[in-house]
Image (cartoon, rainbow, N blue to C red; front, side, top):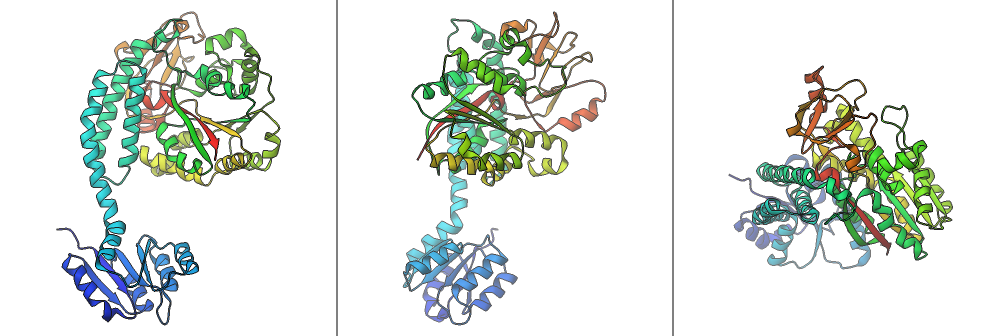
Length: 518
């Protein structure tokens, strides 16, 4: 049997409110009364209260003082302020103290019920409505998964699944989460089959349904605005999934209006060295290695693989014959973010500014290595929440707000996403085989070809090869590669971690958004 909703009504003329209290009791609510602020505070300390009606004008401790103490004790309790006054300064003070609603005396039963519904029942009603709506949509999404023919179909499917992931959030029952999880898994299996069948074909000149891919993002989404004389800033947030992007977008929309959003296809491997270098160069990795070997570090070389992005970008700008002053920045920590913000005026001297923020990628790796971060970001919803918390308090959000003041056009994108892996696949390779858990490159790989997307001729997908017999293999869905040596140790270490490099909607279908200052 469900516990009754308990309401605390605090008013120094509580006896005059007995008709309202009896009305609420008839409606099934439990009502506790208090005639002053001290009694209300004591009640909150000793009883489980769901909602408080609080008189603004009481002798002794005022309603506002009582409110502040109650919120200190339990900030989650909704408080409805009841007042005789409509003076603006009183309402401003109450709202600033985080009341959840307010009513003007004399109140009537309909107002009271509406306030209860709004502050108590809303979450429950929204959850019920969301559950019902997703159940109705489930069959339609399943049909789309089973009949998807092209890249556009898979973009629509992924957008729908992301929408429901965000709608369902953490507030619904576990059964609904499991249904959505199964449908996402079904979609990723279908998407992996689609990529295996179509990816190679996208590199032929006359390929039909060829999506926007990493190497074409600047040419299609950035350079046209430079030609029109606009100041443009590209913010690339490394390793950002669509659901994370949708979570932070409302805070950006306080300063910017979304002009367009498109999901493009991150190239394989969906790893920073490949996908991001391709974006900045405007070329596939094989062409980068052929044309600018000094700008393409080999897989087995020491040092960072993305330290020459600014030079790759300059090469691309030159090929397109664009005359522009360009500034490139990479932000790896809070200190660098503060410096960027402090020197924003210098950035405004350039027609094109490109800023790479690595925090989400750093967080993803930290989640693998640090047990505490793994606990904080246990699943996709928690990882999304942690990303949002960072963004709300980041120098990046401040930077975006400042850009809006200076009327700078904004392009926000990423190089690839990330997926939570759970199914280990055995693979054997020599010591020169790459170490990434979602893709492998090597000359003596031993694996089950039915379980992977194998590329025995890297040139077919415009990837360089380190040896004449190099092969690439890509993990699909939620799989990850593990060597037989110390197998159980590595399975336990990597299972349920967020990885990238392989084939999944989360890794490959990533956003590029164009925004204008409000």
